[in-house]
Amino acid sequence: MQPKRLLADLALAFCSFIWGTTFVVIKEALADISVIAYLAVRFGLAAVLMAVIYGRTLGRLTLPETRAGARIGAFLFGGYIFQIAGLKYTTPSKAAFITGTFVVFVPIILAVFGRQRIRRWLWLGATTALAGLYFLTVPLEGFGALNRGDPVVFGCAIMFALHMISIGRHVHRYSVARLSFLQVATTAVLSTALLPIAQAMGWEHARVSWTGYLVFAILLTALGATVIGMSLQTWAQQYASPSHAAILVSLEPVFAALTSLVLGAERLHARFVLGATLIFAGVLLAELKVAAPAAASESLAPISAVGE
Image (cartoon, rainbow, N blue to C red; front, side, top):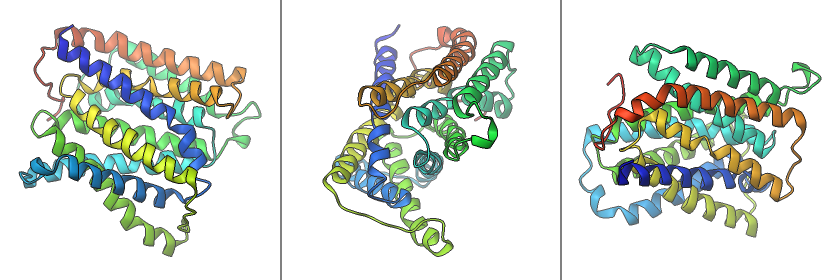
């Protein structure tokens, strides 16, 4: 493996660790702040920090680059809205594993819109993951006892798949620093703009109780999960196709489940373990069997996404 490819893989794995360990932190923080307000504060702070860090290069922004960054940010915003809204009503490790199913949707979306042939291993992997999703999210009593947060979190898997594909499409054309800033700034702007709309429509009443824990959670997620995580992911996707990157980011729910278990936030029951195992097996079937031949033929040069 080439040095930059190895560094990119390590960077993506580290991103998974950061994002996975913040699931419990975010869930606890939502006791003190509403969902949209949390996103506005977190991404607003992160955007300010990134503007300071990347200040010099931001002066060279072009209109096409701004559109590309805004498009990536719109998918990121959608993913977090679904994820954090669902996290209010489900457990951290379950939310993380459902989010992790985006790894199956990345190659499927590329195949449909990029007109690639979908191999049988991909269908087998997707079917296995969906079976795992059933055991993970549907209680033994059936759909009548389904946690209302679970299908909401599932929506974020689609958004995050589109987010990763969008980064892969644009990162070889534009500055990593500027794309990183633009997607975070777009999420901050959209979250802030949604606050009064959600209030007026009765979707959510904005609330903030500035506790010590909330300040800690915002600083941790703004700096670690957003400034560092988003920058590393965008950089790493210069040297990894969306499907290859997705299999590494699929480690996120593993770290989330381990963190939740260690902190005593929940107990892992047999049905949960079965579902999580099937999802992980589906991910391996879909990604390793389909992506391995492509990965072996990739050069060290930045990779273009299919369907551009």
